[in-house]
Structures are given as structure tokens and as C-alpha cells.
Image 1 (cartoon, rainbow, N blue to C red):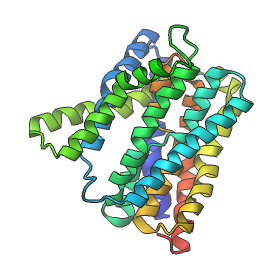
Image 2: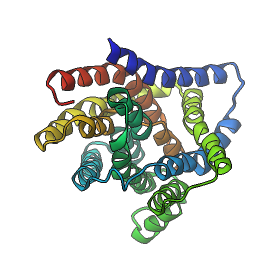
Image 3: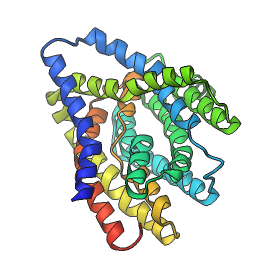
Image 4: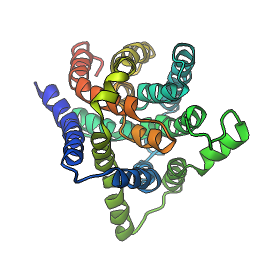
Length: 314
């Protein structure tokens, strides 16, 4: 019961914010012009600052574990390239490929990882290593993927040099790089700067969720429901079962295993929607997957935690 309550406390506020955004659009308090600006603001300001704050505040030196770090990075890469390869063979619409793949591999790793590890162990030492192993790759791969599959005509596709430049210029990647450098150098920012950055960072997820709800269209969602349901099953069921099993066989236990589990089983992150919209994608597969995985993870997180505890792995 405590695991169920924990899962509800983590996931239901996200769903409520999505529903709130849908309601605000229905009563015409939000319009398309606001949503367009809000998505750009999130993409260029709040999300980069959120990643900077998360990474710069993590102590990677103290919790450094090379085996764990490599596992997170390699698994993230295998999932990304593997799912994209399958999507290219099975989904004809390139734009839908990009949204489908992103919905499958990007988790709310930072927020949910810290919360779940602290809930079980009282500390979140390994969450920093998990964030370092997957979050930079999440964002770099997303830029490559969404650039390559974008429906916009003004984006270069298949040009390695221009794609590399797009990655380097991407505000989110810049936030990741600056956050990592800040953490490794050990910069201690004055309280005024810390508080200001935290205020901006806290806006990212609520604003993204409100935009998802406001732009959600049931008719459009039904037209891509097969993609959304498949991506959601891959995200919160298939990938965790496969790769958590591999992690157990490789000897990962307790806090490290929980961090790996959250990296794999967490709901699709709302920031995936921000990035999809920023590269000209419709965003409906992403938005639907965020909703489905957010609700579905209430059950899957609780079940997985119960099983892992019951078998003595955590």
C-alpha cells in the first residue's frame, strides 16, 4: 500500500496539471498564440535551466561508479538506436518515427529517480550517476532524432556536419554541458543566483504539462493511438523487464538497481513534448504517451517495486 501511495503522489500531480491545461484551453483562457510562445520559452529557457540545475547540483565525484555509469550510458544508447532502427522498418511516416522513438526511450529520470531512491533509502547518492549516464544522451539523441525526422523543410536532414552543429547550438544541450562543467569544477554559486535559477527551473515541468493538456486533441490522439499505446508498453513494461533483468544478472542491487529501474520504467518525460514541438512535429504521439505512461506507471512502478523487494534485490 505504501508503494501505491508513493506512485500516486509522484504521478497524479502530473496528470492533474495536464487536465488543468486542457480545462484552461476549453474555457479559452489559453490560446494558440500563448502556447506557441510558451513552448519556445520552455525549449530555450526553462528546460535548459532545469537541466543545468539538476546536473550542476549533483556530486558526480563522490558517487562515481564507472560500471554503473557505463551501464546507464550503454543501455540508453542500445535502446535509442535499436528502437529507431525498428521504427524505420515499421513506420513509414518519418515524423511519426521521431515522436514514437522519443516516447519510448526518454524518462523523467531526474525528478522521479531522486524521489524514488530517497523514498526507499533516505538518500539519493546514485541518482547523480544515473543522471550523468542517461540525461545528456537523452537530449543529444533527441536533437539528432527530431532533426532527422522533422517535417519542417528548413531543417537539414542527413547532413552530418549540420546535424552536429544543430546539436551544439541546441539550448538544452548547452544547459547539459554547462551543468556538467559546473559540477565537475565544483562552482559554488551565491544564494541569490541559486534561488533565481531554481525559480526558473521549477517552471519547466508545470508549464510543459499545461501545454500538453492545452494542445491535447482527442480526435488527433485517436488517430495515433496505436503508436501511443505501443510506445507506452515499450516504455514502461518491455524495456524495464528486459534491461532490469540484465542489470540483476550483472550484479546490480539496492540503490543502484532502483536508479536503473527508474531510468527504464519512468513515464515519458514532458520535455519530450517540448522538443518535438520545437522541431515541427505535431506532438500528439508524444503527448498521448506522456498521459498513458504517467497513468500506467502508477501500476507498473508499484508492481516492479513490490517484485524487486519481494525477491530481495532492493
